[in-house]
Length: 591
Image 1 (tube, rainbow, N blue to C red):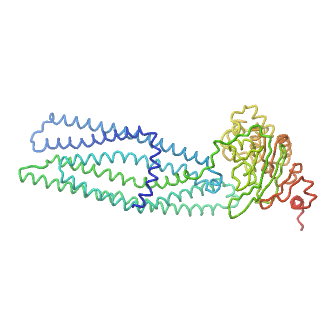
Image 2 (image 1 turned 30 degrees about the vertical axis):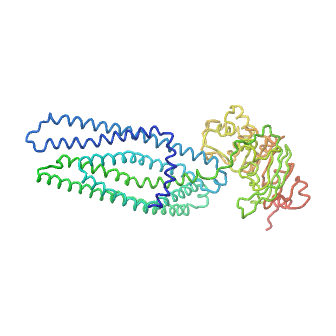
Image 3 (image 1 turned 90 degrees about the vertical axis):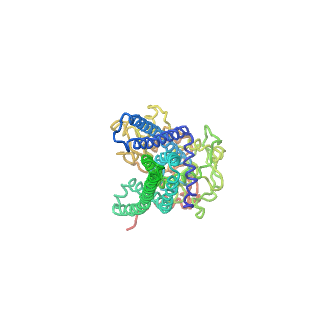
């Protein structure tokens, strides 16, 4: 148990650190717990007095008992009132703490490098922000309540029991901790199972997110049965480890209740013997009412131990979930750019000097890349799949930092710039569309939330999206889901292009931007792009080489290196790799 306890201390300390802003509620909760428990402990005294008054009397004067009854009612009401206050305070602390923790995790995710996001399961990350933090909330809600009432009840009952009979009180105090040893032994076994369960829950969330998000692909390739098998396999592992965790933790409560039953029985036996001995000797040590009071105290004394062990399942799950959440918070964030430079009115001049980069140090990708781009040039990047085209774009946008070398914009190293400023200089349209939950208008204005309706419509018209938007049920106010709903892939791409048109950036990145659009629309879009790119530095990744004939400079990449560069006609005359790529588009398959 020592190792488990030691490993939980940093987690518990970090969890409690989030409660500091709400210390006032914690203090009020603790004071309320003291008053509530004190009132509940005084109730058995009144009950004992009532029993002693009634026993041995032939005629009971209820008028004499009435003050005791009134006191008892007042005590019960006071206990209930302050129990309610304590519950409100602990709930407030718990919900605010969990809210702060969730905000911290989400804010942390926004600071993490894309390397972490790309290397992690999206479903697992979502699970840590939702399921795991919810599990912490459940554990804290029960934990705080049990902690405050439990501590006060234990010390309060000890004081009251010692005031009645020291010998019996010591007997109760010595036997009761046995339940803690039982709980500690079972906790040691169940702890690892709860950690395993949390990990498998994250794996299951990732599997579901993947399969549901790719449902069209699943159905297109008749993958339903295999998807079901994959889900069943992970789900069965979750069932197995979850069942074991619940089984071991479920042993705690009945085992501790057995020990507490022994305590209760021992109290009754010793109390009865004390009364009989007192009667026989003519010197009563305890009255019958005091025995009843003592039995009530013995039950109340053991109750906190039962409650604490009863929530052991939630506490173990909360600790396991907290580790997963803190693992995200402990990830190394992107290097701070708080003091970074801002480039305004960029001319679009880019210098790439001796740049090297690889996702895996053991697998080189881009090596010693050099390039000089003049303002307003249209740069096309072509090459086979995996040659580094998209990686090149990632480096320009600083989604990843170069391993060696430097990239300069208007003479300023992008590592010295604020990322927000750097990325605002580019307008990016990718092959994958970016459609978010919201109206068509909100989707177009994503980069410029303050844009007017007129500006939004002009941008859509320029991108040739206005005509199909008008045909939607509510036009620009039509709500779209995350995947674009009933919009075609081409229509979603037009919205993405409209978004860039609206931001009007000094530089453009077009990564197969018209791949999902029909030929006629593409021709119109190319004209719109030509107008947009005029005077702007542009980077175009294209597989259809016919679309980049008029580029000022074509970079031919292979294995992370620029092996050829020049204009379209120059590269064809060389008869090199570009010529082979270009002519392969027109080759006829020989029968």
